[in-house]
Length: 252
Ligand code: FPP
Image (cartoon, rainbow, N blue to C red; front, side, top):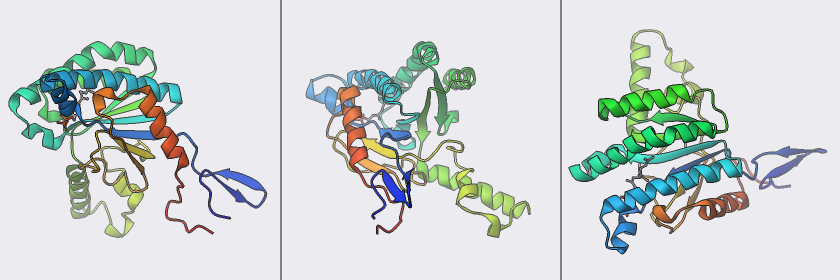
């Protein structure tokens, strides 16, 4: 029989190949600006509403039993936006970390940051480090926030590490495999995403988790990020549950 959607029958035993609920959902949050423009509001209003959607999505992930949630909050390319918008976004981030961390920690959320955090102001870097440190023991939801993140930069940094280790004689190129290379990425210790979701109708990965996305199911929704919440999260999970995941295996 075909390697099933969720289950395959191996002799008598039923093997769960891909559970109905994805273990790791990664989200490209898009459409804040368009949401604001449609209401005649400044872009900042869209980003503020986007933060509320972040809260709703974290709650929804916990409620649905998703163990890992990764949010693309600021790309390495976002620094090219006008200085006022960059400052608005970093201000929202500062506020989010300072004021929402205690609640997240109470809910059992462990926070990790991926990306080039050195580009943020020193106080934000300190808050991020504090948030990561104080939530390490939490296990209910592993929340990763991608900040100043770009997948090509991440892969290049790992390639540089490989080159340095080979040059130092501590790594034989023949010993480099996917597992070892993956462990040099910023997502080391984080499982690959099962589902990557993008809002606002754009059909791109935009330099997000390119290595880790190898076998992810992609779900796109027209909903703008500030309108996203529990209902849309549940719809994305339902779409995921309908997909047949074969990881390159041949059906038959
Ligand atoms: C894309 O909308 C969204 C962003 C560039 C930033 C996402 C940020 C947030 C949701 C708020 C901050 C998050 C945290 C965790 C504090 P866009 O501005 O590109 O929208 P557009 O494509 O409609 O212009």
